[in-house]
Image 1 (tube, helix red, strand yellow):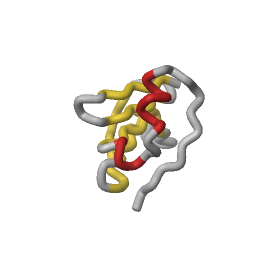
Image 2: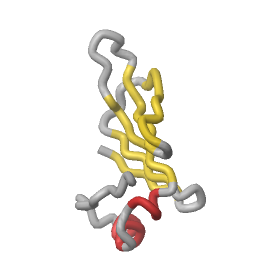
Image 3: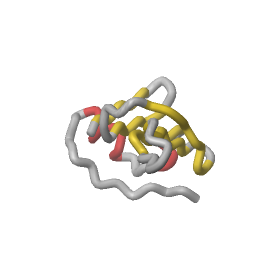
Image 4: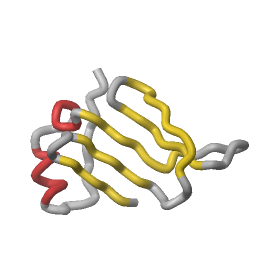
Length: 78
């Protein structure tokens, strides 16, 4: 699993594996799932979260940038 935080865009991307990408779907405003190419049994291979500093606790940014993994976070989707 790979985490990438783009502080300029305030976006977090979580990649679960390196399967080839096929399709994206915004399941909720600012929450995007990336799916693999398997048409019959499509799996999520990545999740992008936009405006992440508004959805995660304040400590998120510093902990992620310090590479203190795994992170335990509660996502506020409301």
